[in-house]
Length: 176
Image (cartoon, rainbow, N blue to C red; front, side, top):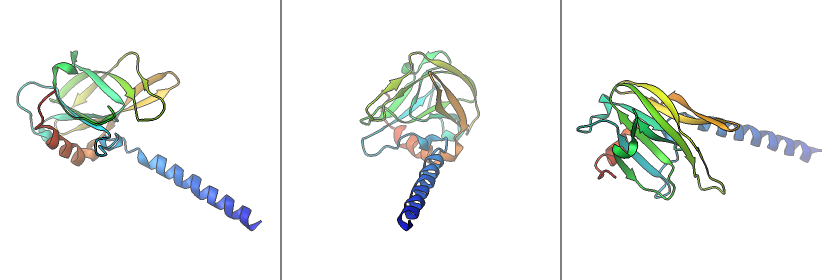
């Protein structure tokens, strides 16, 4: 009887710990994207405005959870923008898009390739209109329900030290 009570207690502790760990992981900011563990994941910087690269406090930053991929900004393909990348084995990773203050329209899809046995991706893009302020961080994270998906918008300012460190290391790279 005593071993059965111990087993139930251990199971309860394991369930509570798992719930806390899984629930506590989602901070809904840039650090939710897979970190760059050596060469495992990638880091991306996209400059969405013409001219010299501005200081990070004079622009707004859009980050994603590593699953959402921004394909267009204000109707222009991101392939036409300046892009710097630190390549990893997986395409997912930390992504930051720098925009001048104002209202912007983003076209986005998703690609989930976290190294598991399955991969998934969107078959069409969705559009999100966002308001950017100087010094702000807008974080986009994927949600899904059945066969539908979308992008949550969260305040990602808590990750600004990590965003800034990645920005400083990526800004000197030659654009793709």
